[in-house]
Structure formats: structure tokens, C-alpha cells
Image (tube, rainbow, N blue to C red; front, side, top):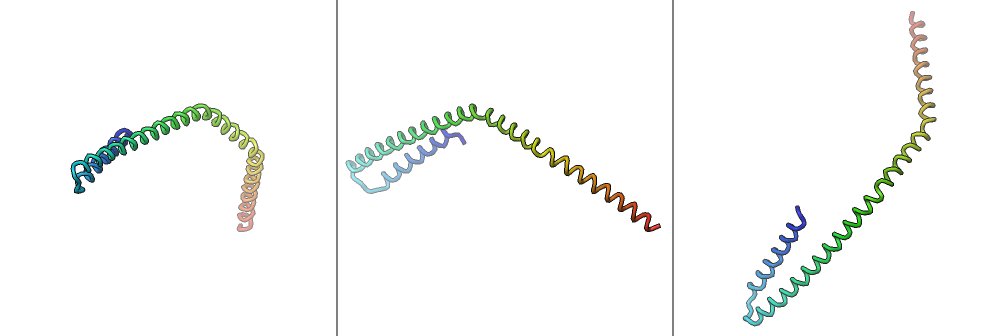
Length: 120
């Protein structure tokens, strides 16, 4: 949903609610005009507040986008360096595990040979 559509719907709903409340209460003409003036100024104030909040949001999003553009390449490089360091630090363990697996496989093969020769 687009932000402008949401804001437009919010404004339309607020105006409709305000008008409905104003016309559903029993008031004299002067009281009604006073109520409409107060409601109008209240809506203007709220609209101005919403406008200010959207300006702040837009500014924050712009700042976030700028920070992301600046820091993303640095973060990617840091991740690459960390991954490379991890691969180097685990290389010795990887080779040790490969030797142990090979030794276990050889032992299993010897045991199988031994079992076959005992069965004959």
C-alpha cells in the first residue's frame, strides 16, 4: 500500500468522522459554527503534525540509505576477511579429521578382511 493512499484514507476518515459527530449532536447554529471552527483548527493542527512526522520519516530514511551505501561495502569486506580467516583457522582441523577418517576406513577394511579370513 502506498503511503499517500494511506494518508489520504486516514484524512478522509477523520474528516468524515468529524462531520458525522458534528451533525449528529443537537446544537444551535452558532454552537455548530463554533464546533466546526474548533474541529477545523484541530484537523489543521493534526495535519500539520502528520506532515512534520512524514518529513522526519523521509529524512530518517534518507539518512539510513546514505549510511547503508557507505557502510555496506566495508561490511562485505569485513565478512569476506572473517570467512577467509575462519577457513584458514579450520584448515588444520579439517586435515586432521580427514586423516582420522582415512585411518578409520582403513581399520574397518582390515577388520572386514580379518572377519572374512576367520569365517573360512
